[in-house]
Length: 140
Image (cartoon, rainbow, N blue to C red; front, side, top):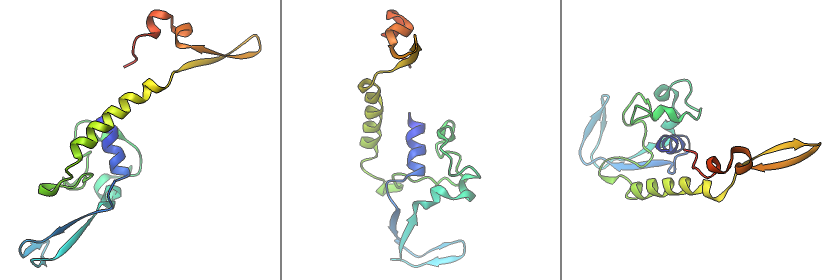
């Protein structure tokens, strides 16, 4: 469930960018960034082929199976909630709400099989298809 959320936020980030301000003069790859400089970090990097590989635009939740950063080549390449001391305060709440909603969706729907019997389409519910003892057990 977490992999799906992470991959969804990678492909469809909830924010377009992050803003930060340099607290002191710093050098990054030889470039001087002066104290007070305002920086915008573009979250479009979630679609950067150099960071994510050739399948960057494919929905692949398994990216996050064994890797907190989803296989990204840079540890700061995946920022769905920001980072550091100013990370989104709603991260934990959002994650919990997501899991609750995904858990409740199957309770709102029923499934069954549609088949043709004597030339007529007929819906067969889970109990008819599986038997009463299996139809009542959760599928997970």
